[in-house]
Length: 322
Image (tube, rainbow, N blue to C red; front, side, top):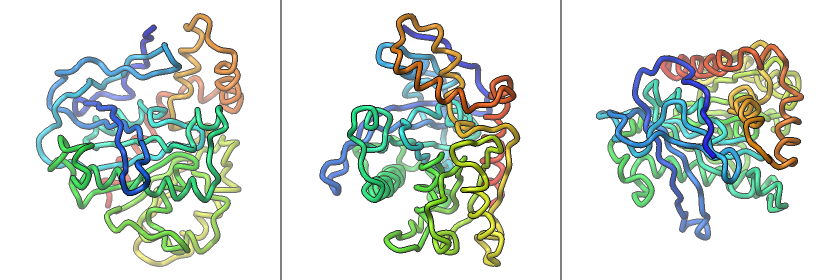
């Protein structure tokens, strides 16, 4: 069964291509990653991309086409990290819109912290999870820059090595920030120029984590976020950044989004719109979607496309300013 998705969030600046693939990291016991890649394309030569909602049920992309050729020239890279219990394609509308604005966006699954890992009891502990996530993000950057050619040799020469960014949602926001931190076991990835985090989970991190961030950071904060509310996560982090006088901190920004819930940057409102069209959808899926919907204010349900487009606008504006 294939459903129709939302229209694109905005008028397309570039056509959008998409590739979904698997890769093995031999440096980490052959860790297997699923990876989605969106990118500015020169033509719409491939079939329209479809994403899986649940096994056997898919929905069509708003704008992406499969295996279309990459636009000529070099493009900035964003590696996007999903939240806890998420998947790599939970942010398809966000990633497609960023690709339309000229970015190559790579989003990996994080095995051990994905939706089905938690459903099946295969989730890993936090320390292991964060180490895995850091390795996953570095692998994606390696791949995009041609150091893991089995994955993305078709991208060779298409990524601007001086404009490499890492972003993430919720726990993925913490993972993104960790790529530029000097705290304890973290080693900054010197290739990362800035980080972008949406509704980030950061309350567990010590003050030193934020005083040691080596690159500019954009904090997108949902004022209606009940999972990582501003007072427990964004506010403490931002107060530390504001107290710093170095260039990285001075270039950092905080954007507060009125009515934005924890899932403000994801496709979950779209999922709630599509689910009633699926006959015989499992009760567990409906309960999961219902639990998320219960934390989304009515104002966001009626304007979520505009709200998601605001995320795209602020991300692009911030990265263009650097």
